[in-house]
Length: 227
Length: 240
Ligand SMILES: Nc1ncnc2c1ncn2[C@@H]1O[C@H](COP(=O)(O)OP(=O)(O)OP(=O)(O)O)[C@@H](O)[C@H]1O
Ligand SMILES: [Mg+2]
Image (cartoon, rainbow over all chains, first blue to last red; front, top):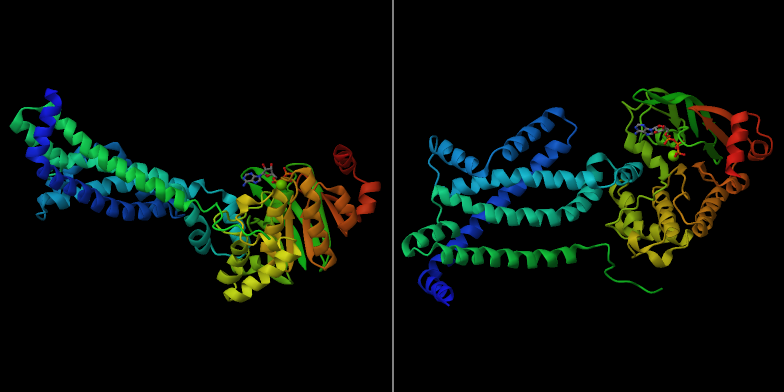
């Protein structure tokens, strides 16, 4: 009962702070996903392209991002950029997270494009469609649909990974938990509360993407006409 | 219509087509036969430039195709292709599959393209399936849509690569029926098939491929009843 009592206490006292922090967490994740998706599209394009040089660039980028810890990337960018221009910690954090997820998103898009049966491209080409027209009209729409589930998964990972920006003093959910438990000496209860916040955000997001996936299932008829 | 001279094609060290010479006249129906791996698909794919042969010449519609110079997309518009596994676009309805290339390649307007698609669907007996997705069709229906899709580009030649091999036996007939109809209308066709009854009935010429060469060709009756080459005999015996 003590546990429950403490949790209610924390919510009473810090509920507003946690809500504000929730907004920071969501917005820094949102901004980073926006940039990450653009970066992902560009680098997936590089990787699929027949130009060797662009393939290499994409490999190097993905290799570096995958091969180093996110926290190192955040610190590197924050202090690296700080020596050239002054960036506030939110912007630096969003940038680092965006560059990070961009690598994974590019792999998702590349995989989805390459998973489309090559007969699709051949059929399109055999009808006289150019390579770029075939990509745009035939391959990408199918690949996009196929990338929604792994993309949703990546978005969830990004949301949770965003907690690392606490270390460059962005006042996000995790950072708020850090300071609250430093104040009340109840780390167990405080982390429980912050965990709940993350969980609820993820559950709401999952609910939305499940609906989207159902909606996107175009193989079902919109309307079956009985002749 | 089609003239192939001294065509060769390799995949790495594997010399799939050695030296192919073949002339196909307008309105002619040619059936390609040969054992698995003999290069039948490769030959068809070269005709449509899905594979680029390293040597030899191909002219289509009395126009020499030089792959570096010619606009291959333009050539492909003249050559319709039907695949073993249909390759319909799963995210598009039957009607959308058919009007895609006429609209985006030939620049036809939507209404015109739709109207033509309806006529083609009627021709292949699927006028009531226009708004279905490929997943909702049987194999035989899919293949008939694929034929209609290729015809929508008004090709000069139709290539068929084992169009009935992926079908349940009871669905083979409906596809062959459509192909017979096309032949009767005078479409020039090159067909890879193991349906010997069909070949006998429809083909003007049967061409036997072995190890990347044409080893025998002639009228179907002659080839089937009196094959000259020992490998043709063996191949035909295996089919029976
Ligand atoms: N893209 C490719 N890369 C490498 N080898 C290939 C490729 N396409 C075909 N081959 C090889 O070329 C040979 C001829 O293939 P092809 O598909 O033309 O034969 P086929 O006569 O159509 O046989 P099947 O009756 O099995 O369809 C085979 O040995 C095949 O493995
Ligand atoms: Mg084949």
